[in-house]
Length: 227
Image 1: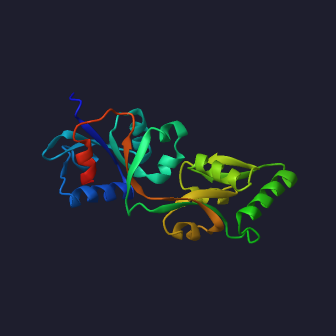
Image 2 (image 1 turned 30 degrees about the vertical axis):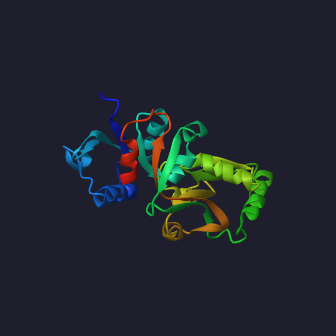
Image 3 (image 1 turned 90 degrees about the vertical axis):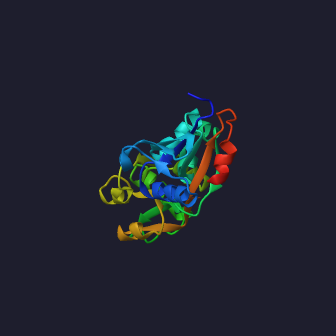
């Protein structure tokens, strides 16, 4: 295969996918997939040297890091959640005005005495002293959550890996609180959760990223300029 082939990763589903595809439409770049919307591969009409790979947004970042993708679209939150050795191999070239969301610390509404991170720190120590157990935090973002908690003085906690709807964990006995990504906060509110006043961990949005691992590819800059 030619060294000038450019591989682009696009999220395979969700709002990121629709937002990215809209970028291509606006730029008059027609993506063609032989098997329709479920196809995992595609190409751009008139651009024979570009191959489209449809992948999970998290996997796109990993593939950029190992060099099997040259360009990728994913969320800033997913990049920052990845291991440091992966982050060092990926460069953010552009941020877009879609896919905007915030990673937050959310607690049950009935924790009326807990409004801030210092309050949460106090509760965490109470759990350790009185219940002889650590405060459990359910999250799909363990790395960012751990780093944020430690930076705010909350050290007595245990992370619970969320595999589904994180919002239900405090009400099924699986955790006490959560960290989760939210766009409007409506889902959290509907599930009797509220965001701590100083509980914003990270602001995220859709990004155009490139692999630092690949050698210079002819026409790569011209492709990036179009996106």
